[in-house]
Length: 253
Image (cartoon, rainbow, N blue to C red; front, side, top):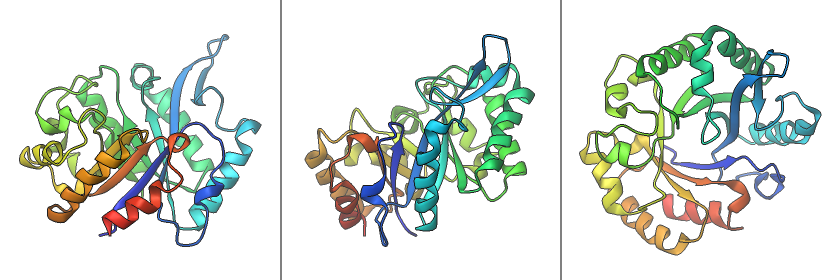
């Protein structure tokens, strides 16, 4: 198994630093998709603050095409702190159609990341996962819970228990969890997730910025020495250390 080295990419400042042969980066999670209504009440899908087809994103899609050709998986993140799911589930058929239609315009996208940070009905989440897998069977599906929602069976920011989702009929379609280990990036925190019934190789440990990178790396070395961790991610690319991805590769190999 190749361990994942993932960048979330929201501040589109250019990817040239990682676009080279044998780059350590395995995934780029493009952030993030939101839904809403224009002033004339026309439903929209936005990548951050504009339509994904807006000319301001031309360079983004060009660079992501290069990344795709280098073997980096391009994953589309939906939601996050800016929300998406309340609106999506309020008029599901309309907004899902916008999402699906957009994805079809960008064949370089091969996965979707559901970052649910607003209260939703777990049944709606199951419906969305099942429909994505039905319509896009080759897609990977990831989720981005906060760490305590993996360490314990407490509701996450979406208001549901991830264990209930994971053990449901659609749990088999979740490929990995990008755990937001922003409060405690430690061996013990990772081990609690394993003890709570999650496979080690499904958990990708997330860092927020690099302020504690030395400490995080020490803990990551401990984990790698005994656990089959799924990988690491950084929120976000614009906050990276110049050598973050190569440092992660050296630890994870």
